[in-house]
View 1 (tube, rainbow, N blue to C red):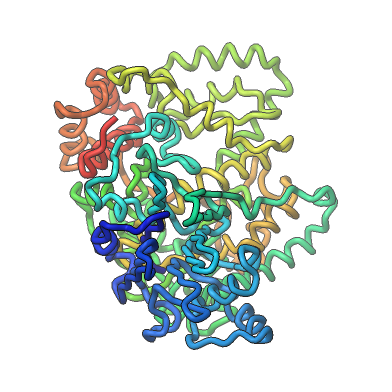
View 2: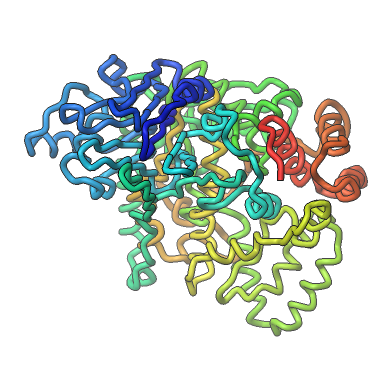
Length: 622
């Protein structure tokens, strides 16, 4: 796991000092080594921060060169099938000086060109300069576990693992993209290739980019997509599917256990991480597991459930107790996350990463199970709502939905208003915005001081909507393409890398992804009354009988309690009532007062505070 930064241009680059500054801004991503390289003609500069995981020797340092210097690369991630690729490439006559995966990646490009992407099993972002072709080739993994930002102007391409590495150059623009801001307030993140700053982009998951140094032309393309559900899936044999799932998960875990540094399993006590633990123990008799306790917060403390799994499988188990955090962590996280994100669980994720890093450098997690196998509660609720829509006229339900819009946001925890409004959505081909933080009217109130503001999030969301007749397929694909890479994986990457910890997610092995979306029928994922059915079936095979597969505890913090009094309340109120706050004072005051009256506005207030803290730090403006 590492950090990369670079530049390529149609002309010689005069100002090169910012590259080293960009590397310094990402020191947390790679404390073990730092490297910088410039092409002889001064048109390409590559920088790298290394967190050494495989081949700890200097032969694994980057930037790395190959084929007599024709190819140069900076790379962030892990290729889990690099050993098989190395054997295949050796049979074709390629030779290797190192024992890691970076040189294998270079040889794979030398052998197969852009087509090498289809052969890679891993999480990765890389930038590869081909001196003969005068092109820079960038690519991102299928699920989007590793990040990449880029900016193109005046025949120059700049790129980095984190946006802050580009912003160290004071000449770079810092204008907020109005449509990205609207998406942030609605969805809680900035989707797809959009970036919160105008003129910048994110390379989307499963995409590649080519920059031609002769012409300055930028080409982007998708190299992989989710498979369509097989027509034979509904009649598939359940026992055969279960056996295939077990085999795929075991192999994915085994591949991701390869490391030359201490590794462990982040055992939350939930179904997904428990299955990962079971597979890890199957492949190795010595497995370290870690669980995190939050003393004094009742149901949020899952250590008893993790302890059950650890005892059953005989792991070397460590329980880490999270210390009380202070409001000072919020400005720190606002700086680290580059783009603001509405997910207060970034706080416990950072705490977990900090604690685990004291014991190991690599940790396996259960991320991805909900999106692949229908684990979120809203999937069952959508299916239940679909059943009711078949019984009642849609016109009547739309009257109910319009009436629900008049209820205040946060009313009765927010769920009643959200799901009454969802009742008016035609679930035959659409999805209700059940996770929206602010609806169009609320966003207009917040941004009434912004000239020519126009809501755009709903239109952009519709553009991302998967075309699927099956409601569950549509919902899970939407979350896989949108929520997973733009929220969950961003949260895990930034929080773990701030602590120089590599997190790996076996459930996001692309073979499991293709199995889940291409082979598993919807009724084995979720129904109106059950969820994550396939993984539960596997759990009954592998986990202790007393393990509760129905339990679902999200990773959360007691935000409501924190906002009643103390430093978090002071930070929130001070930030949103400050004279330079970008949001309308009447709108923010209504949210603050509503929180005091018992409305569930905590996450909405978190959204506004994180945005303001981010904006102030980076000096961004509309």
